[in-house]
Length: 162
Image 1: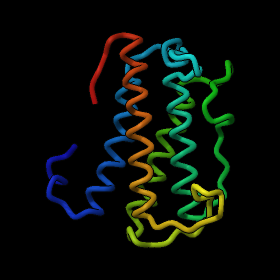
Image 2: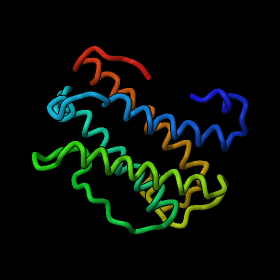
Image 3: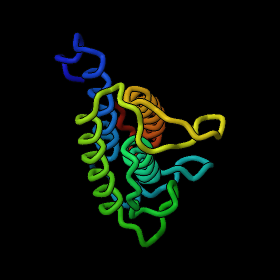
């Protein structure tokens, strides 16, 4: 985490934590072979590349569809599963592109701006969100899955870290 956000206003802190977690996922997969990225490491079948794919979908849903109201298609199918014809470099490139688009959206909007798109709330009803709520939710989502990625990476080669 950058030192300059330790005493920053809340909106700068929230954006910095989103960026931190987006970048942390890339650090967790750095240097691994295609085989290691695809390898399911737990009974549910979760792999590091599956986490990258899920995070891509999550960023797309929250920033593009729900906040900006854009109906852009995402080129990745089946959110967690990695098919044999999907190449890790393509999945990672799509994640990187989604990170950049999400950053442009979050940097251009006021944290209290309401969403233009609509999406399900926890109770299944449609709901509107502020960017502030979405930033907090994305931080929570990415932190959880980065923890999963930590465990999977440690099982592969013993590497640990942020």
